[in-house]
Image (cartoon, one colour):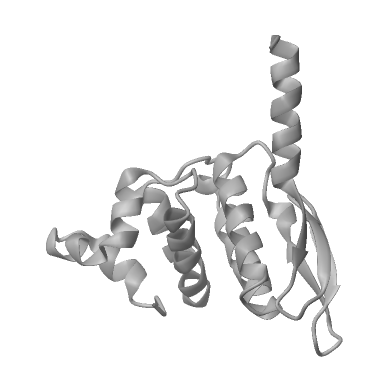
Length: 168
């Protein structure tokens, strides 16, 4: 396979990962694109937006977030997914998070810069990314998400700052 053929194949695979038809929890079928907002009516007839526009196509962390959200769209309410994307958008808009394709404990601690109610949504999303073995999380972050009490025992402040508002 030549280099250009390989690149074309990778572009097709990448396109398949970033444009998807999904079945929502309520049975509706939608097509979402990474990097674009998707306007939708909730079950009460209110106009809402799935804010995929905060996610960049070439960023591996953002691809992992997109993949994880796609899984929850069929298992969680539309309101939950909208709130998750809004919380992620607020976190990714922090100057220290711009262009980050992988997060370490310092970026995880930046969740303290967004409202506590958003942290309670983002941490489970990061756990889902870890469970799906997607890219974008360092081994330390994966360990923190899987074994938070180990971090408490090490005397790291990360445990207290993030787990306090975690609903899980």
